[in-house]
Image (cartoon, rainbow, N blue to C red; front, side, top):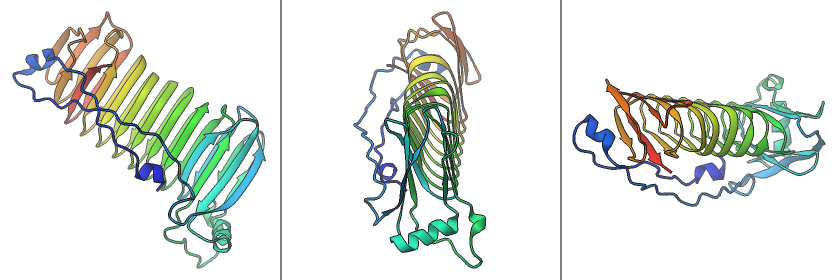
Amino acid sequence: MLEWLRNRPRRDLIIALTMAGGFALLIATVIPAMVHTVDHAVEYEFHSSGGQEVVYDQTFDVSSGGRLVVELGDSDVRVATTPGSEARVRVSMNADASSAQEVLEQLGFAVDATGGGLRITTTPSRHRDGWKHPHNLGMGVEVTVPSRFDVDVQTGDGDVAVESIEGTVELQTGDGDIALERVAGPQVRIQTGDGDVYADGLETESSRIQTGDGDILIEELTGVLSASTGDGDVQVAIARFEGLQIQTGDGDVSLHLNPSIRADIDIIGESFRIADAFALPVRLQNRHIEGTLNGGGPRLSVRVGDGTISLIER
């Protein structure tokens, strides 16, 4: 795993209060702003830890507005940006140069730069008979592209990070964590089978985030969000509200909102913690709250099987 994901700081955005009284009293209770945050500068350590060495380093001519496609079986992937119209691909792994070249060959590792875009793939079917994939390979692929670029990454077992991209972003990993920073574009699609998702500075017309068993943490969201996790907590700080749909089977949901937003509220949970600043006329029935904020607006829908839903003033 990437060093920055192994050691990433955890932030406690959950309000922990002892509530008393019945359901109606819970709705009327004031939630003070007790959010604790910590510095969480991201440091990327691709080839300086664990004895990793850079075994591939090439530059390619691409065009702003092109598309990056990464299809790897088992690798960490980081995508960052660079000025100009060049792309750079670096591969690091726990192997010396001679054995690494054999591994890359047997994996069918290839980089294709055509049509102004870039495609990075492995083709396991090219393995020689009897060749076995080395254990603890620790392969990491770092790609830099122009800031206006579409990104499509698929990796079977690895972590994915994308930073400072303007474009459509689609990220998928079978078993790994996903992190985004300063991503803006028409659409974001994120899926991980068993991992956490973190985003800071997400501005899109439509974003969809799905994790089978992990937490979702989003800071400074602008745009429409659909997020789901089978067993995890969801925490979202909304800069500009345009619509929200969240579902978790077993976890808490904390939403940091400006009380002046206009929204149609439709939430179902085990319990609720709503700040007094939200003048929310509600209808209560069977763990279900419906109402409007400031005359109504885009839909704010949350479904929690066994957990607490918190609306917190920001």
